[in-house]
Image (tube, rainbow, N blue to C red; front, side, top):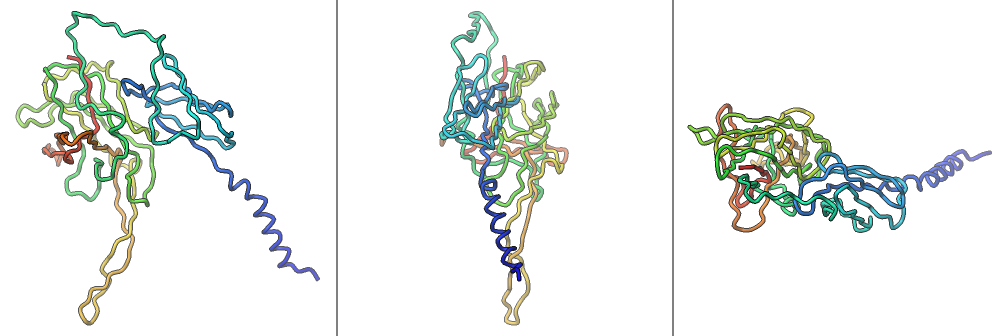
Length: 330
């Protein structure tokens, strides 16, 4: 008589051994952001190729790339190439996903034209560097959190230009796609928000008239975001002005964080309070803006938050500045 249990067991064992090679075959994913080595501006349209496997992709408008392979080749090399830049090759063994890829402009690129009697000057207010965006902790994030009394919608940073009537040509911001803690949180690389440029209110000294608004949609985990505003011709009438981020409270931007907490259960006859473990959660909204410190003397950012219809002044985390900069011509 056949032993059916024996054959069932044998079938299961053979099935497992058949699928183990497939299950154990890991997928390699290479992702990051490509920037200019000197200016630190993001570089779109860079071709990123695995040379031996011969698969490629291109960076998007924010210089972000993601390249995955199911059949990795041993000792393969990532190549980054773009017109006007020197080709950069990086062994996959040396690739670090949290590092920026910096490309150097080639010698064949056109040199900048300098006019000796030009009166227009360019300056970046609140400038931050690539290194400032690394190893950012959870404590130095600026985000919208549903349980805080003061709603940070929107949050505005104060800038002071050398002269009024400057022309705003660009804005840069640092972003973190997911909090450093807790570990139990949904991951969402997609976010949309409003970017405002505002003049100073002569009466309050806070944000006043909105000069420009941009609806921003991000579809990747880019750490640095650069906005080119040269075609917008934004004239700032006051020396002091503000750049504001307005969070959109929609499910599209939600980050749900789950954690364990102690909750009251009952009281014993001797008066002891008994607690039990329970799950807790909170909802935060992207984008997560980052604060940074490059030395011990850096002043915290001058920030304003909107409560109802009024703007209130608040200082940022000391001594951390908000990774938000504005480039102007004056």
